[in-house]
Image (cartoon, rainbow, N blue to C red; front, side):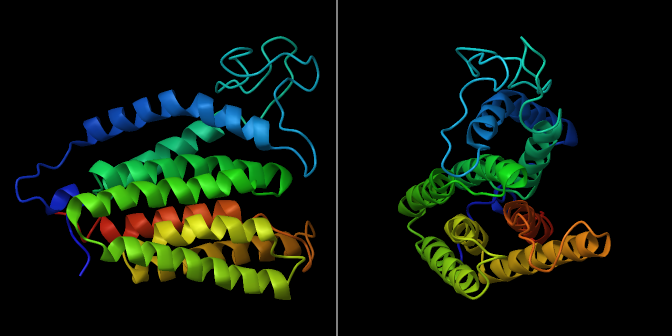
Length: 267
């Protein structure tokens, strides 16, 4: 059986956090993390073969902590020339707030919360990059999977419960293998960047249990199919049009974690 230790609600003396504390923690997390995530999205949202973006494309003002900080804020525009940069204003902030609230609300604490916090942060960057240029950079996908698995390994060493970690590894390999087959059969619809990101998605979804992995796959596939049908019906896409999968996989996995563990781990 999977150890119930990673969830704070399992502790017999745990006191449920109030809604106010949850909102404050989520807001602080969003305020501290979103500028870094916006910077990462702007840097990686470039076409294949082009160098990572480090300056404003219009006025070449350096971006980031040593350059223009306005561009990586919720304003989402170059502070010098006003060029629109990165995701729409508030989009990353809302994504971070919802993800942080969902993870905290699921009852995770300690190392598992750190692991999934890292996974969610990199996953948000990947989702916005995929939406912008329809690619999932390899180094971000490997960072999401590697960071998650490494912290969960530390948790396994601490708790001496290896079954969830082993299941996470198997989930990553199985998910990547399935997506790889899809990439071979349908190269126009599924790319090898999707295969690399599948490692992170499978690892995150399988750690709590196999049911979470199945639910995440179902939710991601269903949402992508519904959006795809909607785009085809509206004439904005064809059957052979590649649809960015990163946002659906991230949202489906996060929602599966929330749905399957909020109720079951409530006191």
